[in-house]
Length: 603
Ligand code: GLY
Image (cartoon, rainbow, N blue to C red):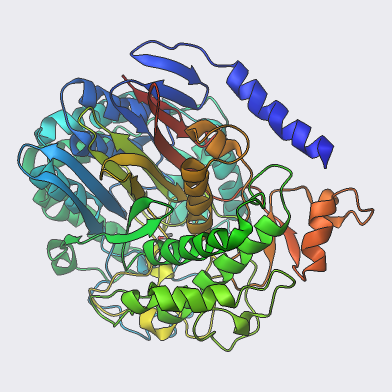
């Protein structure tokens, strides 16, 4: 146990030792973290963070910078998110000249095309129809969502905020370690399905360089600059109609998809009230359905807070490097309640009744907290309000290529927490070759086949069946924490499917309560180890090597403790890739997850 603690602290020490002033207003910065006096962006790629910071320095507000960051991510994280996908944005405006101080949430999640009804995927011969190919794509929402946010809450024009992304698309970028690793996993899939090389030729040739892509290779897809310029010129119709719209339909329909020009033209952004709940003196502002993230985090944090209030506070939380003890059990039990309710109750509240108030009701959370037993874990039927009566589930694959989260704060204290996705790495693999971007495979986030877990191993109810215009349930959890004066204190969010919820929650708690490594700073919050449980399968996942997990000699006492409580332990490489910003004494501490290799920027 001592050895493990030392190793973890050493790793952190190395990162901190690498701190160096990097100029541009950064007070201090390690490889993946920095402190900025005025304003900051933490994205999972440095070029995207810099795009946002450029806009902030030019006088843009947090929304302007968020829009610039997102369009840049479309270019430099083409396997994670982009103009072919969708997302959620939570906004806090501080003393905004037009809007004052307020919070809002923008829902630009993809929607099911008119042709996709409840039985659409049950009737398909291809078992991969909801994840790869033309049928897998929802109507993309990113362009509409970003432009909506810009027009209503931004201050700059489209040309200005799109300029950094257009530049990046023209210049290209170097494949980093995360790109190369993601590509190498996908190349294996292409080798196992040789017909894909022709079917998804753009991804194979341009993004995977014919299966030869390696770290340091330059990826150049200037075609996307053309799409971005059309968007800058004509706004949303420059994407959903005309040349780009036609090219999207050609790509999807050429691969068996059923989207129509009416689907594209009919896409609408939804602005909704964010979800709010308290946690240890902070007000948490999160994303309501069709994200499950806000509700799940509200439940988890509510349960953790209740246990703290019951004298549990001295118990080290499980995210301490050597602390996989009772605190981890408490986390796991809270996760299990939240994911059981996610499976049973959540869907798109524009289409089905989602009992958000009841799930976050104080008395209900009291009752769930009372059912947490510190002496043992239980079977799935014990958790949430009504467990789905199923006993098996796929182990969740460690898909982490899709989805990207970034945080922005500006010099006024306004902030944006934004998570976007095309779902799997490179989405459906269907690219729009004339304009150099991939279309999502968000249809798999619906309950595509009744009684079957989705590709993330998630059980979902019939409330999440697809119907035309409906948005699939998501785990994306863009979150902002406000202090008692209503000012932004911290922001966080992640990529990683269901691990978005567990990863974001653990980092946020670390930021708000401290984590035992250092005081609540962004960098150590990201370095601290995280655990994952999603109720089904009934497995607790820890970032320890399999060998250590299997050791029976008592060396790793805390793991033995977890086993004795009845947990089936499994290894996980990492629990989400989290980006976070927290207000520190010297400015905004911003950090990008070392696992994905991003870097923050600011001034
Ligand atoms: N596509 C992953 C999510 O939205 O949860």
